[in-house]
Image (cartoon, rainbow, N blue to C red):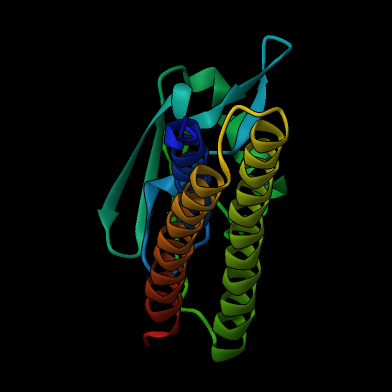
Length: 184
């Protein structure tokens, strides 16, 4: 009985999706709505995502406009943006909030590149941990007599092939984001 690699592949795909989601919150020099996707504020005593309570749009390559559905939440949203780690001071005119993206300094670009590399390494470690868990399950099945040694070797090779494929995918995503950040 060969090991079922489908759940392993699903976990690896989820890891890559999480990595891409986390990368989208890193601000390059261009406006991107994903930057505010994780910002939350207090709304009637409950933490609420800013994107659930406002229309967020890119008005030009350097400006993000946030239009609250309920104007009474404007001050709370501004406060949440100020304490978030996006690094941009919000400007509000009483009805909308504008985030103007300043050009990145070379020093800040290098800092972001390091952060991207670190996040990439964390994603690769997560993929390797999934591989380790799968290999442990394969060894247990072999020990319990549920598979032969040839099936074990074949299953371990399948898991390793998946690992290589997803590590390569993460490396490609990391390089692309790194290149995007380092462009002037």
